[in-house]
Image (cartoon, rainbow, N blue to C red; front, side):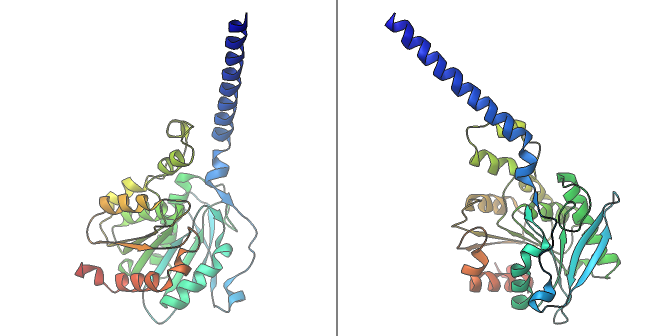
Amino acid sequence: MLYLRIISGLGLIIAVMVIIYVVSALYNFFMQSHYVYCPEKEILATPFDIKVYFEEIIFRSPDGVNLSGWFIPCKARKEVVLLFHGNGGNISTRLAFIKYLYRKLGLSLFIIDYRGYGKSEGKPSEEGTYLDARAAWEYLMQSRKINPEDIIIYGRSLGGSVAARLAGEVKKGVLILDSTFTSLKDIASEMYPYLPVRKFLKYDYPTIEYIRDVMCPVLIIHSSEDDYIPFSHAATLYEHANEPKKLLKISGGHNNSYIKSEQVFIEGIRNFISGKYKED
């Protein structure tokens, strides 16, 4: 009898654990879009609040979605940074980074909100972010008459995958990947090793595949102390990137590495833009 009770108790424990696992898996499956995209609609501030002149731009995606962005001109140099942010907030939550790049590098900036973020219409989706990025590129070339060779495609975190996809399509300019993953499924499986995320995750963002198609110079920036995306992702991306390429190792957390490693970060970008990667 005691043996049967033990078996029955173990069976009950296993059944409860299975139920908890299934419920957890189902919850994460149906909520995955909320993990991938964390947009905020309210614009909390603008570059005017940090005493930087800007133009608010409304442009249209290939599938007819009205998108919002900020163009911040700088006459010091002809290059323009086309900036794609990460998965949370909106362009107004990147003011500190915008100010940092603008004042430290002296370059014009064009930062956009993906559909569903900030003042951009629509609902975020993987294909939508790619369409939005292409629309931003076309805006710079057609409306601003920017030479494609002078466009610096810059993506942070999830925006790095969007940037790599665009760079692989246009084959022009230069590409900077900052704190970017090899693929969303790779990073998700590392964060949730007990769940079958590779099988059920609807989103991919396979940066590792896109970077193989990039024929322009590539700079990969990543912190060895990144608390969200391990440095190994950057090393793998670098391994699969075409020449010319450069890997810039910095320190600090996922969201503050550019501040903690300011000198290395800024000098690395300046040298890259100036073409010194050709010396490696």
